[in-house]
Image 1 (cartoon, rainbow, N blue to C red):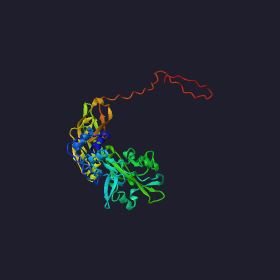
Image 2 (cartoon, helix red, strand yellow):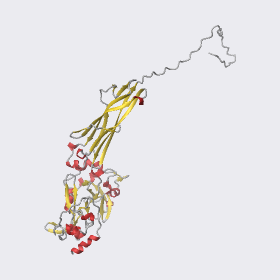
Image 3 (cartoon, rainbow, N blue to C red):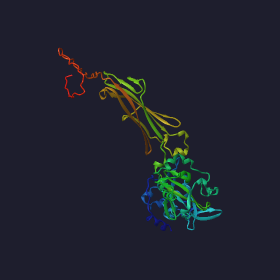
Image 4 (tube, rainbow, N blue to C red):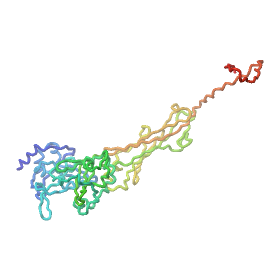
Length: 448
């Protein structure tokens, strides 16, 4: 029997791996009340038959945002079914996944209910090598539903009895409200989450389009109002939607959609702003950001101050919010620069709901030979950059200053207007005559 089970090793496909190896002895528990049968075999006996990707990975580490936990390779599921699984069906609760059990004659698992042992399958077997809840392809299909006769319903409208049956009782989407704009974004991965219906995968986008609730790729309803979110993290996302018959309000069905969540949509970025200012009391200052440069000055040296603010709302965040938001604890570096010159004298200050960093460029020089006589308006630019793990935020800012430059060169006087010459002395003035209306008119050329 053991030789037959180990023969599976040669034909089972291998997944990818990025976890570090360990070398601890691991044993499968012989628990016939949980698995279909019991087989005890050590990791040392089994690992030599695995590919290198799994041979060096007896366990994985999974994080739920607040803590990490180690899950071992499930030898029982491998020797019985040839499945590469870490942990077991109960393990997925660690990352917030709700696991269903459905009775089935062919079921591999055993559960005790009302003193009776039932065979069946769990929706999730445990974790994959990448730490994502692994869907059980043996899980019984959902009840066949004619979706043309169904309509989407809010999870809050479920009868109390069904809230308990469908594992909605006492929970809501309040923790995920802060991530609403990420979850419901047009390019969110949630729309490609899949549900297996009668053996055929269908995405959430396709299901909502079938209900006429997607317009140009954008939903016409708020997903958090209709679907209950069980998990939304880098380990993956799980949500459940509910349908109600148009003709029979008591006929209610549900479907669970799952899929991967990229880091861009798993954590929210806080607001990050920056500003430049010109402090008072500097030489040449004659008004608000207005300076004078005299004829004997070759340049003007100014101090430019800069301040950046990371508004993370840290004091008001719940532990869940801190796990799903980039905050001060995630900062790897925070840098300021003015006119492409990095500031070296920065100071970092922590406040309950924001973090500030301040610095200055003590001698920003403006040369006189770069100015035109009169008024010159100059723009000074700054950049603030905060880096997190695999992510960064940039804030650009600028300030305008006026410089009145007196070059010391006299301005050219306006050109003289020619005057009409006086009549030459000794020349008699022409006698005045009364115009004759009947006389011909001639073009007369005069000297003046």
